[in-house]
Image (cartoon, rainbow, N blue to C red):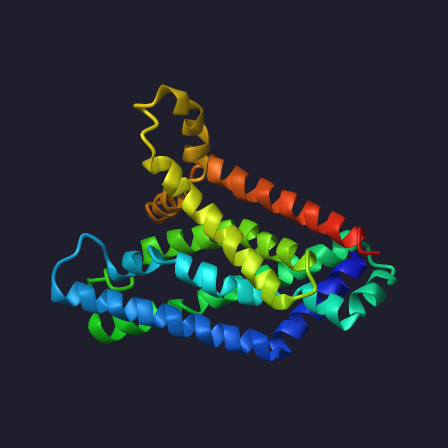
Length: 253
């Protein structure tokens, strides 16, 4: 545990002093601010069935696919390219501690990015909202949606860490992460769009479709509905990906 804490603090310190983290944070906030701004404009032009916060989080997949790969791509690939991974593996720290420290540092950074979006909604509500009108910031939806982002991030960040373990190229790690996250995010919607009820031979897809409905999970969390199935999915997926990452690093010793 002592080595894990040391590694975690080291990774967090590297993240704070890394230009890549600040550039990625700037890109993330610019993207989220732009999406929120256009959601506000759309709601100001005509009544919408959704609030600006809901409209913004419906596009959560944009930062997920464009920003998260940039955040995790250097975790192990840069260490392998620079030749420092071999030195790190000779320390008393276990491989599991190294992988978990890098994962947790990346997940905390990802969570911090999303927390940085909260001031956007507070500022807009302060400047444009009335005393009794909170639809602009919509705190209930905001808290629920952020809870979904944090929970699903356990799996999404772990996928990025795993992809970074598989190659020396940061660009290739980012591409692998992008493709995997795109497939995972689109899988649920694609399965739900199939005529499962009409085609008897597709009946076996009903259960996977109910588990992989990423956008449905977001809607449930935003509405305050907490189902155990997505929790199990993201936690077990996280453990599986990090377990594979540990095996991948062990194979490079």
